[in-house]
Amino acid sequence: MGLIKEFKEFAMKGNVMDMAIGVIIGAAFGKIVSSLVDDVLMPLVGMIVGKVDFTTLSVKVGEAELFYGKFIQNIVDFLIVAFCIFMVLKGINKMQRKKEEAPAPEAPKGPTQEELLTEIRDLLKKK
Image (cartoon, rainbow, N blue to C red; front, side):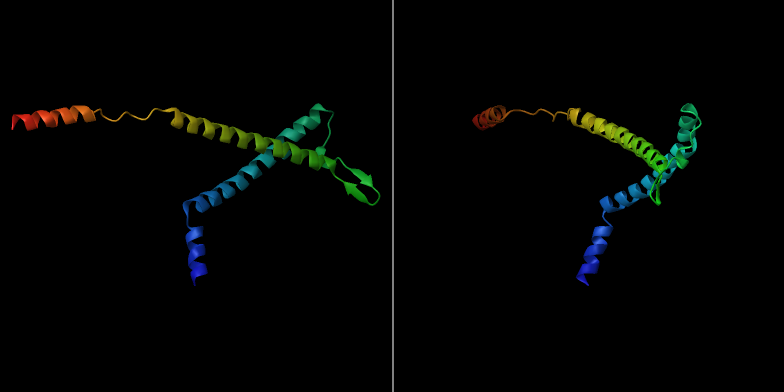
């Protein structure tokens, strides 16, 4: 019974939930980027380099057919995702540096220890 309770506590921590949300959003973002690469960028690149359809680029090696065009598309896909992640992390790091650089408000200044002792001495002299 302890193992189930421990797992439940682990799964309900904020970091795990945030990570799960990040994975889901990342998967959706990956689909958008894949569509951008497959449906927009690669056809344009194909037209520029001479009406080449990258999805059909392949080479036969014996009985096997190697689709290197799809591999090129996946590399472009990866580079776009990696660049987007880099830009997001760069922005997060910049915000964290600004937080660290912001000076903490100074504590209100009170009398020093010597001033307090002098005041106590003077009050004792008056009595």
